[in-house]
Image 1 (cartoon, one colour):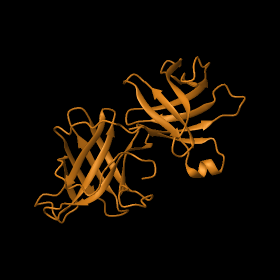
Image 2 (cartoon, rainbow, N blue to C red):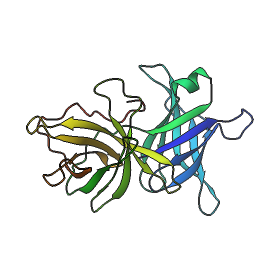
Image 3 (cartoon, rainbow, N blue to C red):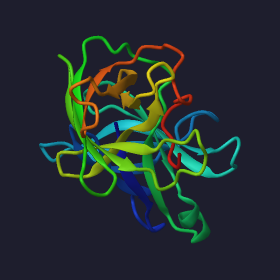
Length: 241
């Protein structure tokens, strides 16, 4: 659950890049400073930030990379702010590349693991306008309010219908997952399939309506059960899809 921006500075600046990284717990200003490489795979940058005492501290490392498929440059970062290490990538949109801009968007590195749903509580409510949903999901470890925003980039059937967003402490939107409208093969009832990215792995849950809720605007969030009814394969987070 991370988002942010990164911008390349003028060549005379001390830091090569400056930016912000956001999560549901923090908003942190970061800088990427060039460092001496000891080998080909050594980091290209130190990631630094200023702590509450005003001291500059190193919070991670970063590498300049090139996409194997796209050939587009991006920056891979490993960061630890005291909550355990996490990985994010800084990528450029097509418009930023065409404009030869130094602006990057920070996105989470897709998790390879799936966390068990366990005991989950939550609710999803259709909004009266904007084809959006508001909801919450909670267990003993977390409690998150979120929005489902229509995915304007959907071009294929398997692409998500919605992106799941939460807010950082300063109100910055953070994409934390994707959602698909689906229909049960057994009952014919509509439901919403959600894939939520957490630091512990990807969490899959469904939002369904019981007999009392059916036909209304409220759904109950329940743990995902693999019954073969999934409308499409929910493979992970994507910047576009």
